[in-house]
Image (tube, rainbow, N blue to C red; front, side, top):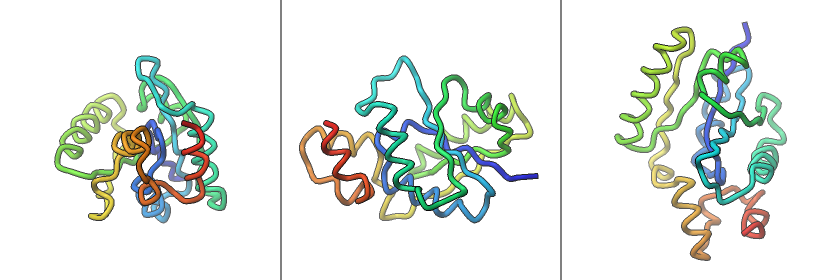
Length: 158
C-alpha cells in the first residue's frame, strides 16, 4: 500500500520551516500532499492561487509532492485522499500541546490515521507564517525566512 501523508496548513506564505519539515519527511512516505486548508472564517494575506503556485514552484522538481487545497476537517480530507498519515511540524512545547490534542481527537474519529510530528531545526524554530506576514507588512527583510525561488513574487503580491 502506498504511504500517503497530508501536510496541512494555511501556508500564508510557505516558509523555510515548512520546507524543512517536508524535505525531512520525504524519505518516510511515497507521497506527501501539501494541503492548503481553506477556512472561510479566516482572513489570509495572500490569495489561495498564489500560495498554491508558490508551493508548486518550491517543489517543482520533487515528484513525490502534490499541492492541493481543501475545506472542512483535515481528518475527513485524509480519509478522502486515502492518506494514512498527517504530517505536522513542532517548533515549541506550545505547538506540541496543541498538536497532541488535535492528534488525539483525530485518532478518536479515524483510528487508522496516524499523526507524525517532526521537530523543527533549532535555527528554524522561531519561523512562522504569522511572523513572516508581520515582517512583510512592516516592509522588513524576509529573505532568510522564505525560499529564494518565491521571494520576489511574495514581495510583489503585497
